[in-house]
Image 1 (tube, one colour):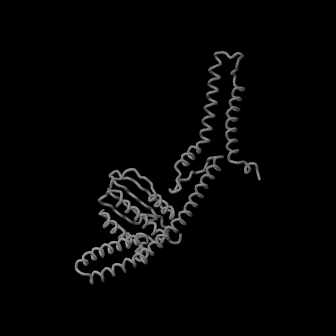
Image 2 (cartoon, rainbow, N blue to C red):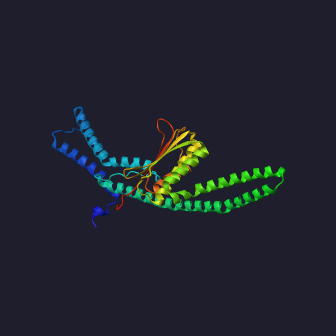
Image 3 (spheres, rainbow, N blue to C red):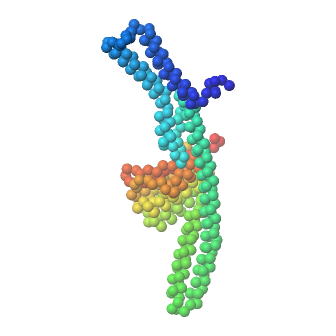
Length: 326
């Protein structure tokens, strides 16, 4: 193995600084030695400007060469400050950076590992979360739902045989139980979107928009393109969950009167857009938005949350779709 391969990035950078400084001072010494300029002892006043100019030129050349050589470190520092493992990060190009190529390459490789590990961890966490949602939904539907149904039937029989003074009271209790049963079924549907599995993404989004509109009073305008490119089950679930979170946030926090839910194809993928006319304001990334970013990262999608100039909030998810055979 050669010395060049054995040299570490720190040693290479140290060597570069030494070479630059040595080169500058060597050239300055040669110019002084070969030029007709002389330095007296003591130094004459007429020689001070010459020495000052020479020193300024050497310092300027040294500064220029070092700045150009170490310029990639400034870009590397800026990238370090803005890196977020929940957002796809840029990578620095290492072309033509000399001895800093190893440093930049190592940092890019570290980002690749962090994003890969985050994606894997998110996949396991979200899979466990979906499994728990399905278990809870089954229990709500099969156990609590059936128990409330039995109670509802018993109340109906009791109300039919009860004397007049108790019949109205039993029917009131019956309506309360029926309302509770409907709420349990709605919770179960939100936890486990059976319509997504049975009828597909478009039908599931239509049902979701209608449910949010009926519960919150927000008018949800739907523009759903049925001619989308093929999507995997995982991508469809991510699209549904992010639409669910976005519409739920509008109903709870946005104070909006109108929202638009758009799903359409675009070059190389699919775009989901949720825009409302609510109050907007600063974005506070709580558990809901972080969950949306984790889901987007899971399928390699790009999520953006913005406040348009006209007001409200715009959530957009760009999902890449690979062409067949690629």
